[in-house]
Image (cartoon, rainbow, N blue to C red):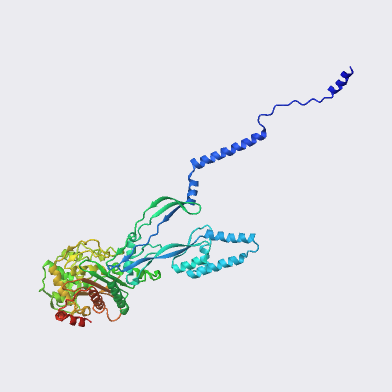
Length: 610
């Protein structure tokens, strides 16, 4: 009993444990975490779908911008050489100085940040050194320092040319300056060894090495070729890891001209001296090989130096021999004689009565300088009779006369296909008055270039065979056509010899040892209200007459002073150019007055030649 009672209090004092409750399935924190993770993955998925499917190009482009590069293979412009291989235009290596304004701005920011972190760093000194180097760059390049700074002041730019085509020595100096953001790149510059002598024919290129004048422009695609390229993928260090594309370029072609630089130099020197001596506005000289139609020389004055673009003024750059047309005057009078001989209205023994030295034609007057009376065809050419050529021109049908002008190339281009070439000026009419036909016979009412006139005389020199002239060495024989009978041409050439003999209008055109056939042309320049007081002087001819090799045309535009006739101005220049050209080409003399030299012993001939 007592034990039982003692146990009861113990049982009553026992503390009962709280019953365990079952845990919740998803706690709210867990829900938040899971939801956030799901949202992240859903967002990434949507973004991946957008990038890969909807708009994949943007990142591809960004990646390609970092890894893909297209590099052009270096290419040098083709050579231009004369007929003997002498170089007239070559490409020389030069450098271009360029800058990255963005990199320059970043360099300044880097200096400022370094100064902020390092109290010992002298920012002003660093900036002063940088400024000194920029001033040195401006000085060596010949540029204004302030303008140079303006060029590279826009940090949004990544490429700016500072100066193109600098010499290797200047490029080395720029490299030694070690200016951040300033770099060099390879390029080429055109150099012209002949300078102003052949400038009008060869032309020149611009700073991008593209032809803008002369042969350089006309055959720019041949000379430039096409650059090949490689499309590569590179790694982070700039190394090529994959060649994606390769495009083979087109090799530049060299061009060989028909010019003989030796004759070209002689022609240029002679015409330049004549223009200076006679204080003329300009002058042109053309030398043509009559057998092939190849242009051996084409020179103009004033000229320019293609190596110095500042001298390439518009009035100097123009190739006047092919662009400027003038009334040729008496230089075309042999055509009237040829027409009459060909048609049969005259022969070598025909006498023309030019009395009283003038005549009325449709209310106009045609006159000679004086009354020559009755003269033969040779005298008509020697005395340059307007009356004589007018009567010969009117003795043939007008169609026949005009066709003669067409046949010798006076009313079309020369065939040389030169830049800016003029076809001359000729107003074709349905009806021709006698006066118009008369003036046409002595070189008025038609304007031609020096090159067209050279083609006409090359036809006469080759016995009446017409062929296009050429400035590029032809790869195959050119087409040719007989337009005048050889017998008629030979008769006229014999008549034209009298022009350079004693009593002729151009004695100064004679050449010792060679028979020369030529014709002067002195014409007044047309103005708005008629003809002014300025003259154009022309002498055209061929030599040697026994077997013509060369045709030469000399044109002096607006000579000043006492001498304004072609026999005084153009004729001596013709003799100088023709004589030197024949000797350079080793053409044997054919004048009977020196035929006795052939009978001398070889030692005697050599002694006399010396």
